[in-house]
Image 1 (cartoon, rainbow, N blue to C red):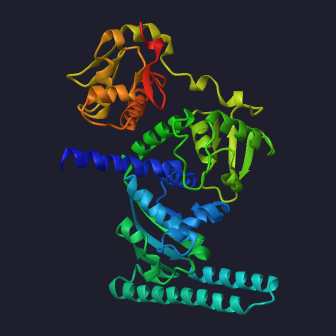
Image 2: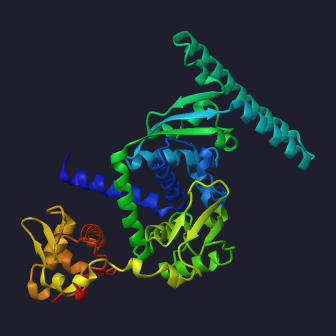
Amino acid sequence: MKNSQIEEKEDEDSKMKFDHFNSEINLLSIKILLEFFHRGKDVLTLGDFMKGNHWKEEEVYSVLYEYEDYSVTEDLVLAHIIHMVEDFGIGKVKLISVVGLDELLKSVVRKAIEEKKKNEDIDDLVGYYTWIMGEIFGLKRQSGEMQMKAIKKDIATWKYYMDRVDFKVSSAEEGYIYLKPLGISQIVHIAAPFMEIKVDYKNSKVDDVHRKLKDFLYAFTQDQYLDKLPFYRDKRYYYSKQLENFVEYINRLPLINGYVNVPFEVLSEKGFEFVKVTSYLEDQGKIKVTNWNDKDVWNIKFNQTPITVESLVSAGEIVKNMDNDNNLKLDLSFDEVKSILSIGDKIVKVRKMKDQYHLLRTIFEDKEEVGKEWFFSEIAEKYDSEADLDDKKFYNAAYQVSQKIARDAGIRDALITTTQSVRINPKYLS
């Protein structure tokens, strides 16, 4: 594979992961998946991911009409889960099961009776619920067939198939369409709590997801994604404003011994992005979410009360090693041969001949100009005077370098970046 093809694939992979992080619903699903992994559980239910009515809101639900493969929102959510597990490389969804078929049938009958009491015109309801129960009986028939096969092969395992049906999912591509050929597309929104998702986790990839998520959240709080809106939002506030709105919202809820119960309806708030703000504050040790997979509300412990903006922004966010400013100022350099940025006793490695390399090479080319403000158009000119390069090429490179410095050297403000330029923070220069 050519270098250009490798870089293009890396860019597509990076964008795909960014889109998952950027969406509140997808990010929530990632948090739940990681939570189950850390608790040593590999079986989730589709109902675990259906929080409140947010997926049913018009701007979110509208995505269903863009893809013929989705019949209901739960179908869409399940496809997202299958793809996220594989997109991040944390494992594979190997099995989808419908369990508790007898209880599922009872719940459908109860729901039908409840709706009959509320609606005098029941003609449509009769047809609908007849169809639903027909699908459930179809699943029970499959369950019986699986039991008979198991009895013929091994008498000890046949009980496993009592009251359940398993469906294998070999890849994310099949995840989009598996519901329709199985004939259960109409019950998925009712059966979500009865649908188990078996994930084979790949342990080595989970830490990488955590690191990428931390980088994303930090950049989010630095307002680097103001113009990168998820499809269901028409505005993104500065993080400082989001934090103000978050505090105002939380203070409308009862506070008991430092705990606040936050309803799932918070996902519909327009003034702040709950999952992102909460995840970042949790990373900073300001709060603790008891269980991202809670069934009724999110129970959140605030480590400092009263809850104010000031209580959520404190010394915990001050960059480590700031006491070593003098040392940093005396040893800030870039080795073009080794492709290593040195900051004090810390080193940051970038891939040679990539955009990040050329960005740093240009900045450090002349010692007398190291501290100047470098416009991306100027860097592009030095990189290739014949090509008409998009400034975004080096804006992205500056962002990636900043993330690597934060991760490898513990310094989050080494570069000052605007949409048009980048410069080294003067406090790290002699």
